[in-house]
Length: 146
Image 1 (cartoon, rainbow, N blue to C red):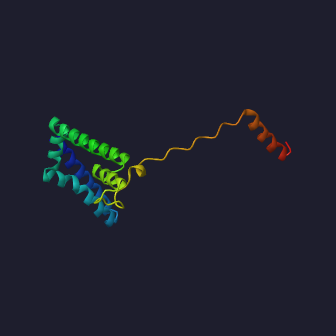
Image 2 (image 1 turned 30 degrees about the vertical axis):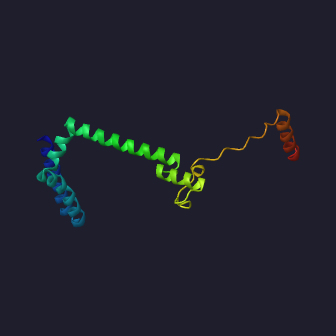
Image 3 (image 1 turned 120 degrees about the vertical axis):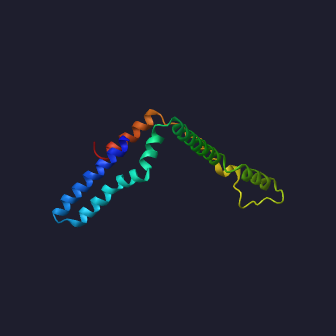
């Protein structure tokens, strides 16, 4: 009830501003303003505003939105885990069969298990001692005459 009144008032105000704009001989702008002003009135007359107001204050609707959000989060989580593992279960089985050399497994289309995981880093070189670091710095400073 209140939403319909507010939308009607917004439409009336917008049409009034459009009329003033048309009076100033800016017809294209006035027509555009009138079109925007008629949108809330059209939403009221079609019943969309009432439906939105009923939905916004309905605990059942909010529960439904929560369930939809939870389902979406569950789907995205499973996709992320699947990508991390290296494909679907079917693709992993086909890759394992191809690695063993069994017939009937398309070796070129299925990714192998090792491809999806990052390779291990090589062992890091031992750290330089503090005297090595300072000798490099001294050489640079001598080069620049400092």
